Image 1: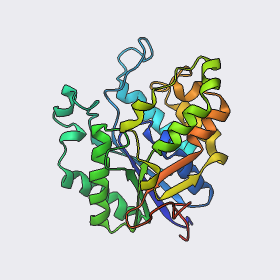
Image 2: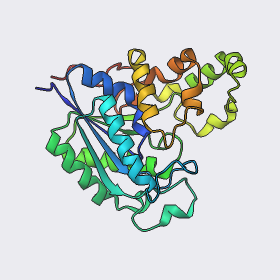
Image 3: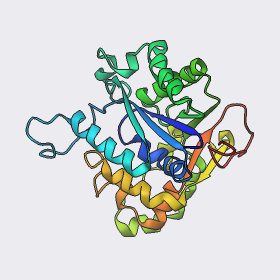
Image 4: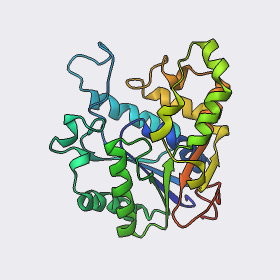
Length: 267
């Protein structure tokens, strides 16, 4: 029997592999039950011409990719809440009927809470209050997830985020390697809306033993993450630095890092 249950809640297919893939596989390998819940099917993602089969819809492919990724990451259950991808902030798709951005928070929270109750979840992962980088669906995950945890009485809620200071330091450290590999690096100013400063983060999880698994999980989302993408084209050392640590905020903890394992002490 699993020792405890983690439910990890995400906005779109592929989000789980990037920010939570390490803690998911780590928990699964340690004998815990892992449940993946995705708010939308990623209907408004971009896909190369000719990638899909004739008459195949992007969302159909993304559902298949998400199941493959869930298998790689050790998730024993995959659920979609049934909302529609809202697209990037400010796009007309934000306001379309059925979009996650227009969803009633209480109604969506009740849907997620029913899963949390069914699973008797010990841990829920969501995103920080800016959704990591300001995407409307990610912000909605934060708001819906927090409310769902209140309804279901889920004891541990971790807000997945990015460590802005760590990202900037890493970009500087690997600048020469990136140039040599022909990888264009972002401007540090681009990180102003990304993640949180280290001073606000309370959880640092070392997932370097699972970076190859994370890369395989990203690769499963081939419609969105190509071999030429920033994620898959970077050298192993840079990938391990960028994706070998996963960062979270747990309210009531800190200041500073107070936890290094989301499932610590759970049986």
